[in-house]
Length: 314
Image 1 (tube, helix red, strand yellow):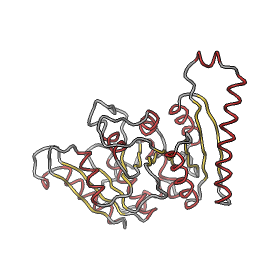
Image 2 (cartoon, rainbow, N blue to C red):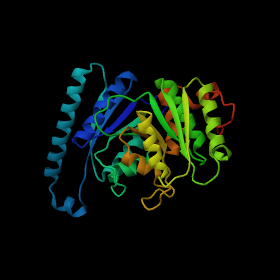
Image 3 (cartoon, one colour):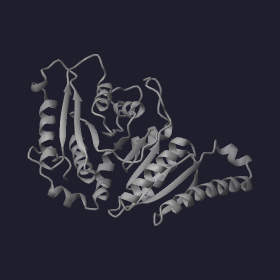
Image 4 (cartoon, rainbow, N blue to C red):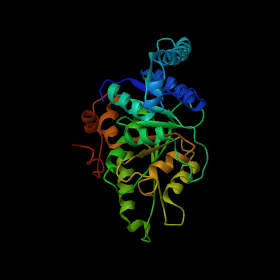
């Protein structure tokens, strides 16, 4: 990501969820000196459709969509003088085009409106949301409902994976930048006593590091039960009135059939609060733009008494 990146990418399909995402992005952009790029992807069903459709028809449809986008952008500019907004129309598979644009403009953040509603485990995310959160090299904020800002209470699920250092670094950056409090949560998967577990030690080390960097932090470690860990995280988010959940996504094993790999999918799928998804490359490239400092210079200002951030520094 460019260190001076100011773009907020908002894919829209003109449905309510994506327009709510644009509303959120507008407020975020105003408060963070950012600009907005709105994109609509015209999905074509296949090569035969392109072959039989006249070029005039396609051009006309693209122009109609562009006019509609420009009208939305114009209305936003009237209400928010000085805000930079650009629009673009692409053709192809939606998530593939959006990922291409992410790699092209290297945005500060992608804001996605999520249309899915419901708590049933069988219900799946839309393909675009699923693939974008899985592969994006920029942070992806997934929204349900009509929200206008990142909240002050951020839930961060912890595990024993190597990405923990990156996740905690991200949490500290967001906590400092948005004056937010961090709520660390995890659930035991074995019968060991909580205080004897590795995750308990990691959680206490993380709490110490976060608080010593002047970010308020609480912890919760649940005993093993029949309740799946991701559900415990969602229950905890409700209990503390969380306003955002921060997760890492992992491409390896990230499938609907693999529970461990699908943890992030379930959180995004069932959470009522915004979910900020970070791939490994998103943490490496993108967090510098949140504070307008380089990763290396910001890292040297952080206190890390337990070495929990050491995996972030390369």
